Image 1 (cartoon, helix red, strand yellow):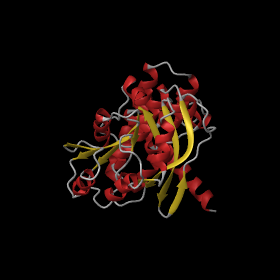
Image 2 (cartoon, rainbow, N blue to C red):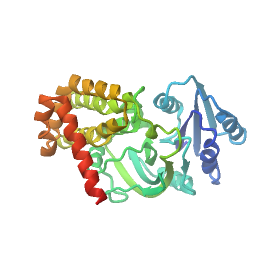
Image 3 (cartoon, one colour):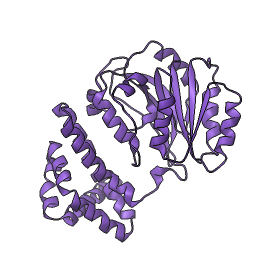
Image 4 (cartoon, helix red, strand yellow):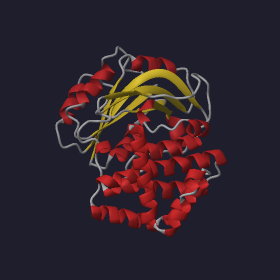
Length: 328
């Protein structure tokens, strides 16, 4: 078995048919791949569609479980997988026409820990194609790739199953933006990563109900949680200075440029709670600012040390000014 495609399903009856149809429209031998569908306690008619496909194709494996979230659904699929490589596909997206046959022919000759491919993201009427600075076909380490190419879309990667099992790499449960968390840890351990200039995926970031379009206190706090978690991750391991700094830069950049600006769309009570979280984790954030090695971050340390409200004001003021400049 060359490939296991893992698809978590939860309330996607409008999309799952297109997703599965894009996989089985190709004339590929069913012996070379399997599709593991994890029913994560869906409450709509998604499984009616799934069962119709399962009656037609004997390489579909259906696993039913109570609702435990996307991370646990993916982990369940991983535990049942038999393929040499794993591909995590979201049930509200679809794969590129002709890509499955290309993937199967390529991975039959591959042994790299991670294969990087391309895809297209659709958001608010815009089409964005993924990019990478790597030379096609040339192997590099995961840490090297992370330092030069930040991308947190798990769907554009194929993972060697034995590599995932060796380092017990799974998705952390109960968190937002699990792709970024998972991939940061994964690239810390990957010895061989290779880029294949092959478009394999179409991702819809703008659908109604998408997690990317919802704002909550817990989601905004993800930026702080990631800093605390990866500070400990770096302390417990002996990675290169370049990789450690790159992780810190990435965590700080995400907090400052993505999560904190979401405060403008939150209720006043949640804003107060967030300031308290900043204060409670002040020293972890300061440590991350310092470890980044970037002066633009290090210079923020005195403001956070003095007052968390002043720190947030400066970040938001800076963000608004940058937006004003871009709009001119």
